Image 1 (cartoon, rainbow, N blue to C red):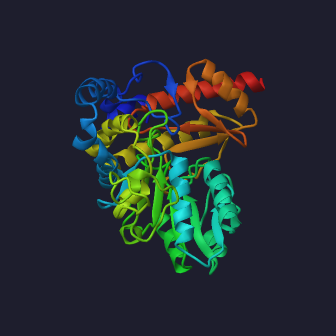
Image 2: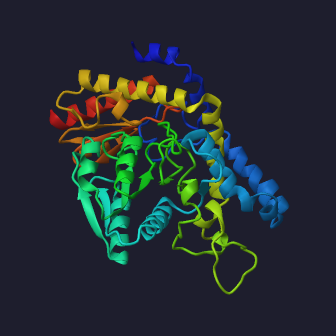
Length: 400
């Protein structure tokens, strides 16, 4: 089918008009790094300044803000995470929450000496795992993976053992878009007696997740990619109910204390997910994602996933047919692929720079990869076709 026919048949096509800038000719292939804002978000932010911040002032903390990290966490759990209430909170950056979760997890497995992580995991995850291992006197056990795929059951089973305290995995690989079998990999880690921390940053809002059903221990994810929370929007952390009162996170701030306003001489952790918080929550940073959560709730994650698969399959088909010399660096089967596609060519770095100058915005990832992030609700099939036509022209200009 042509791009126009696909757009006409797309039941979610009309939602594109709700996003700022979607009506312009700019082609946006970077929704997996920073999502477009919804048109409703500007008025929401303005109303907050005028009515809540400006109108209620400090009273806002008692009326709503103090509970917002947990209230919004429960909404994330219900709409996109497959998590029952009381297990998810919003606050801090992805990096900070990953650190907290890693340190808490290894402390909960005393006597074990290893953290297992793959060499192609997102740099922050690898850097943090290295730092936590050095802090705690542990060893990193690395899993070597193909940069066009990710961690399989066989690879993980060969890496874990009686010394494994924690396994750190990404649900969707940032480079290849490999979609891990979270349920199977979690079970393998548990059979070895280890805890598992999942990074959901490249899947949440694009790929359905079922954290409770998968028996996940901990998960962290950002909210500025497919959840459209804006630059630097705070991340979320999930801790399974059975672990909540066992884990002790290392950044002991007043917001995670049992009685934050007691201001006592010593720290006692709050019960439940509140203990994963540290400092004053970034309320303004939580506003934009609420509009996107409402939109996803309106259409359902299953419909979002259908559109995502359709867009990535369309991109792969066009690349196969029109981009000679380009190789697919993502799984070809949609069951193993998240919401983006990576295309390799020796001149992709230069092509990316040329495309940006023409208002075609993908991003580049070594080795030689043009990464096309297709945010399902704000991207059209025609946009995919137009963008890849520009990729073809850019490569032709570089290769003669």
